[in-house]
Image (cartoon, rainbow, N blue to C red; front, side, top):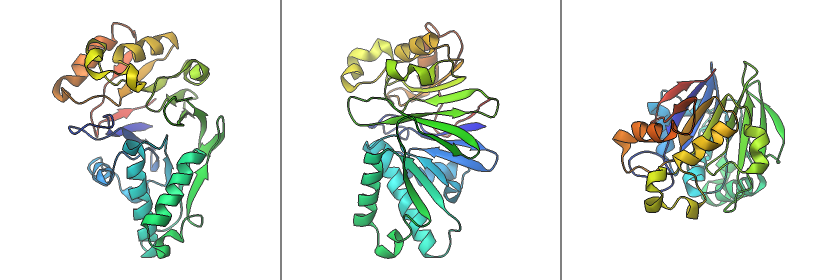
Length: 267
């Protein structure tokens, strides 16, 4: 399996794209979030993907930097279905609040000749806390991260190796979600900024983590590979080095600080 980061930044970045990614296993794709606009189409293209191949999509929550790109995906899918240029079906998974927003946005923004495909060939699927689904042959368990800002879900995906990959969305993994992240082979976790710059970025006021926080948590939960994303963008050229140097003081295993369009092999 491969993880390709379409974007790695937080909501207000301008030097990279908002955090979203694709998990690929051969010719099957699981896309998570869409960033803040139609730049998601550019990112997919430059990552070497065809947007039409994104048939399984998950949306973590309703914040603009995660959901707006999904609205563009809905538009593209429905438009091409209407034109007879999109074969088959597609699924978008999310909790009830996000599904409601997507349905209402489509009704208000798209033409009836396009929205007629929603529920027929484009399925907007509500998932519940703790619900299991088989997506591209892998078991995926969705879970409520218990956000204090907006209802948000993460997920754990069973890898072909039998190990697991856990995504905590874009907020810290809380104690009631430790059972999902515990002993993960791979943990995808936000790191809003460096601990050394917390006074500048105020991560705790925004309910986010520093690189130090995320690494301490990963060490505590016996994670073996940690991917940090959803960062600020003030020093992109040095980000890998700065975040790795801070993180390795608190996490003893492998840390990844990917750039946009970077691919990591997941095993």
